[in-house]
Each structure stands twice: as structure tokens, then as C-alpha cells.
Image (cartoon, rainbow, N blue to C red; front, side, top):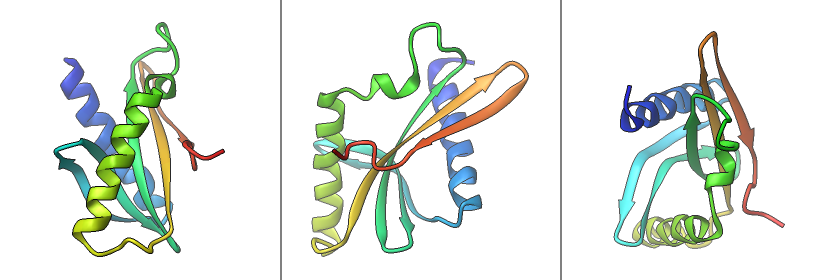
Length: 118
């Protein structure tokens, strides 16, 4: 499995995980000129922009560590494009990271809610 296949598998697992929590998936793989967002979902009153990071091990660090400040800014700018395109500028939003572990004997998710918050 190459890194694209691993990422796609992780995103599919993340969608199922979020659906099981009651999130309504609005978009996947949203692309704007300034960046992309893996999953956009509705969770109660929040519009949630989810970055999915998938790993087969933690040998090179935890998945969330790959979401650098620069990557966060790209996600935020893409979210602003999404909100503007749909006239949702007054919507309550948050940014989550969903770590997906594709381990040999188990699949595991670690959901970091409001990951870009203070």
C-alpha cells in the first residue's frame, strides 16, 4: 500500500468514525486554490473542518505532529473559501484533527477536537 492508498483508507475510516458519532458529512476532499480540507462535517451547531492524518506506526512521530502551523494556515484559508462560496460567514466553526492508525492488528482513531484552538 503506497502513501496515497494509506491516506485514502484513513479518510474512509474517518468518515465512518464521524458518521458513527452523529456528524453529518457535507464534503470530502474539498479543494480551493489556497489548500484542501479532507472532511467538512456538521456537528450540532459547529461546521467542522477535519484534517485526517493516517499512519501505520509512530516511528516518525504522531500523525497530528505533521499538521504544522503552515499546514494549519492553508486549512484555515481553504475553510474561509468554503464559507465564502456558500455564504456561511457567520457560522460557528472549529478545526479538528483525526489521527488514524492502521496498525497490524487493529484500526484506531484519535479525535482531537478544536485542534487549532487556544
